[in-house]
Image (cartoon, rainbow, N blue to C red; front, side, top):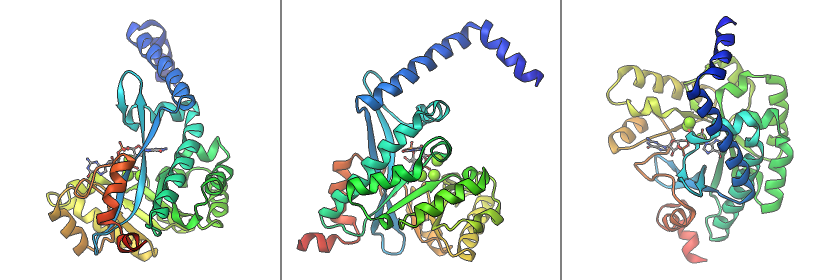
Amino acid sequence: QAKKDGKNLYRFFDPTMNRLSEERFRMIGGLRKALKDDEFVLYYQPKVNLQTGRWIGAEALLRWQHPSEGLLSPARFIDLAEETGLIVGIGQWVLKQACHQCIEWHKLGYRNLQMAVNLSPVQFTRGNLTAEVRQALDASGLAGHHLELELTESLLLRDAENIRTQLNELRTHGISFSIDDFGTGYSNLGYLSKFQLEALKVDQSFVRKLLSSKQDQDITLAIINIAKSLGLVTVAEGIEDEETLTKLKSMGCEMGQGYFWSKPLPVDEFTDMLARYAEDATQAHQS
Ligand code: C2E
Ligand code: MG
Ligand code: MG
Ligand code: MG
């Protein structure tokens, strides 16, 4: 408590903090404007079936095409968007855009392609998420079973009853759920089994050191085994080389993402790659 009070005083008297709050203020205005002026863009990274090497879906990753600072990654603005509640409007835009894009790819013949969208816990507590997701599906015509929502571990620990109600409602539309960055938050296995999930995504911090650290290898194997015992798919994030890929396959991991296949790409580049790598590329050539 004393520490908290001290911090508040500090904020009033320290000129550096003043500059920080000015910067913050500018960023908040910038985020509002970005939404109004359509400055956000989605990049797409493939989700790959490790056995076949085929791209079975895309994860939508948000970028801000800032008028003066260039392309900004989410690390630069997501926290502030969450604190201010602006993530609700931004998240709604992401959902609409991602569903729309998935349908565009289906029309090109990649009819099984899945779309994964990251959700902030704030969208569950401050927005009307279920209505927004339904709107995004309706407006695009995308079937719910092509949409996967990536949740954080912390979400499932917070106000579990209310969250579970919303997830259940979304699931009636065929939507599936995965847990992002798994292993970095609380791993309350009792909670995990209460929610009907599709996949656990092994955090890239474990994958990166898979070959060099026995501990990270043990954790990764434990996550794969937890997923198996709960009937869930495992997705490894941040696979950058073939050796790591081979190791993960031998450990029983089914899916992956990472620079080994591709960085997140602008939509046109992703579309070009689909012809070569998508699961139903042959169908696409016939049509
Ligand atoms: P995430 O959902 O865990 O996404 C994975 C991040 O790892 C992405 O960063 C991706 O570019 C990066 N990545 C993928 N493969 C590799 C690899 O092989 N090596 C390395 N070093 N990195 C890799 P990005 O796009 O900067 O996104 C960061 C985080 O921002 C995301 O983590 C997600 O939590 C959040 N985010 C992104 N888009 C959205 C969004 O639309 N809504 C919300 N609420 N959060 C988002
Ligand atoms: Mg994600
Ligand atoms: Mg992740
Ligand atoms: Mg992350």
